[in-house]
Length: 460
Image (tube, rainbow, N blue to C red):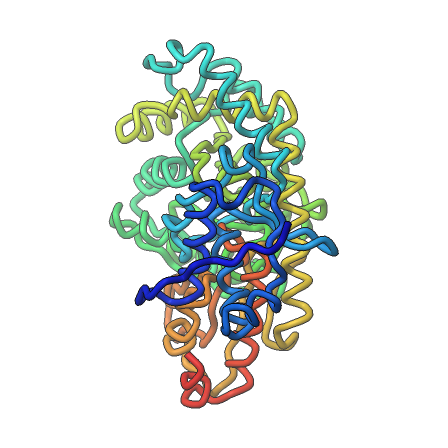
């Protein structure tokens, strides 16, 4: 049946929100059933006397909450009971859209599989509620080695640590490296905001160096090593945040050779390699004797999976790193680590990664179809993009304009290490927003880019 019509009432809430809430209420009251087909958007718009865009946004909001799903060529359906049980559900509104997040899968069977992992670890919950040794159990470490090995990094077990997310890993590594000679930490001109915040917290000077289309310029790095006696070099070399640039292997080898000659450790932040089949060898492979490698699961599987795998270059580094991280975090959550380990061992992590990669490619196709090619820097495997704005747009005005779109749009200020900052933004294509909402938001952005800020704002 598809003759359902929502009762929107006289609420002061936006009509699209009222549509989503009506779906949620009618599902709870049994007026809608799992797998029931909903009316076509244009049909419902005519019945309700609303414009098509409002109904499309309402369906998009309901899909973001995990209540409905769209099937190409078939229509829109209430999600299955298993998807409602394990999927995003009503908690989706708690997402922070300014963060870079992978897109969430919509496959009900996959959500059931993910949820079964939670049920499985519940059978041995007692052990997961105890203190465990720092760096992960043997099972956790073996899972980490297996995961890293799939992506070209093959460390010795005593060099691997399982920690509560990349931020904890980077904070621990920066604590150790920043104390080497109290020198600056080098990075690229546009870099990950998290490392900027950590450097500020630790009172470590962060110095941005120029780049070209392949990443950090070797001559600039060599000169900075001679002038500044830096403590370390921080890089996000694969699908970098924010530019999506990937440094080719020849450049990595050149940078590693300079770092080795100057005695400068490399802190390699590598959250995105699992998303692509085209990644060059990691710095942990090119220069394992000088690289601190951080690979997190949260950026390729799900932001709430706060587990990262760290590979240190030698035993002494491991001792210092353990002391720094343990002081702040004690240990990785055993429940979270057990879930990650189970998913890696039974193939669930690969299934989830495949879904994320497929959805990312589909969203990048929307980018290709919608946004001006000359303004966009991106990669088919990345769930974010970097966009240079036309001269008539200031970055702050564009971010404000896109605030209601459901996409995370962040100005270059968050990433810059020195002035002048480019009039540019990072756009995240992931998170709980369904593909239909991403399409609408990208169309909204494209329309704004074609207009003056004053004219575009009249459509808000």
